[in-house]
Length: 366
Image (cartoon, rainbow, N blue to C red; front, side, top):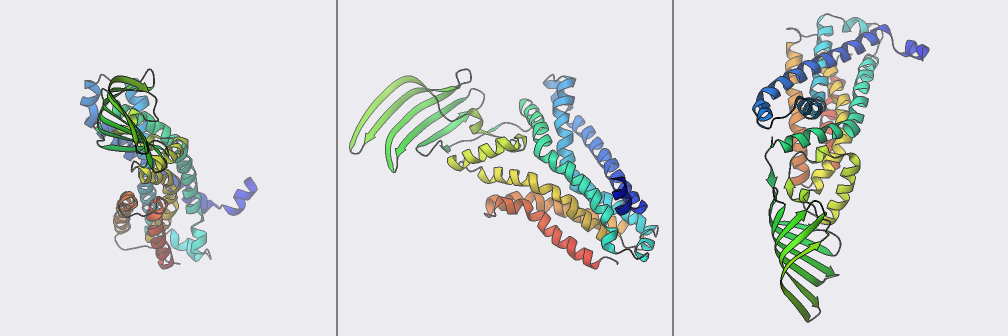
């Protein structure tokens, strides 16, 4: 292994890799530290009001907060780290001797690719396995403390299976009570049974729903039988209180296995959240590739020595970085509103900026 590294990674490569990763870790630490300080000041009253313990705050909320924002800010920090130390190297005339020593620009990129690969590997596996778990801790704490409020759905239509459809006009999260409940069972195109109830209540101990003031209509062709004004009835449905809650952050807290299961259920139910869930799934796989895309752009725009030092490359880098974040945020909107496939929407920022990076690489000093 040592012989392999000595053969393909030179002293200059180690110098660039150490600069790259060192700047990345240092900048990330500074940004996350500042973020934590601002977040504590923003939610301090909330912590005190709910009498949260130090353990819950540190090992639940911030144990999820730090990995989440580390992943979210990884493209920005990678980009800034590359631009900062590369522009500094160019300003100190360290790059010109490297390219003048018969080293191609592609060879010059090797340590950058190695550094971005290390970031990618950690980021990729964290996105798939670590961050969903830590997000679960964070989301559970946020929802318990009502950081984002607790929204609820109204006029909910759900398909429980190929034969059963459910409608609930409104639902109260606190009491787990739904109003104006309708359940319809079909045999092919024919309606066979229709159950209506004024209220429906979920029993968390029995894992069952209780129908109050319900009626049942049995339909067999032109023959019908109506059972009216029944007091109450317990029934088991593939329906849960969580189906009526609306949290923006709920999918980010699901493991990949849970997300795949819910995607299959959503394809049957058709409640309108399928694209959100598919986008979240593909984003976990594709978002870490930004480490390569933004590293390529960063090296291309900052490896040229310019008058005025690192200010101009850093300014251009900040603009492009925020442009990447804007495109990434709008990708979900494209997937939901314009019918763009979720996989393509998740890959859109990397595709667009990958094309830009290829063009800038072509124009970079050789």
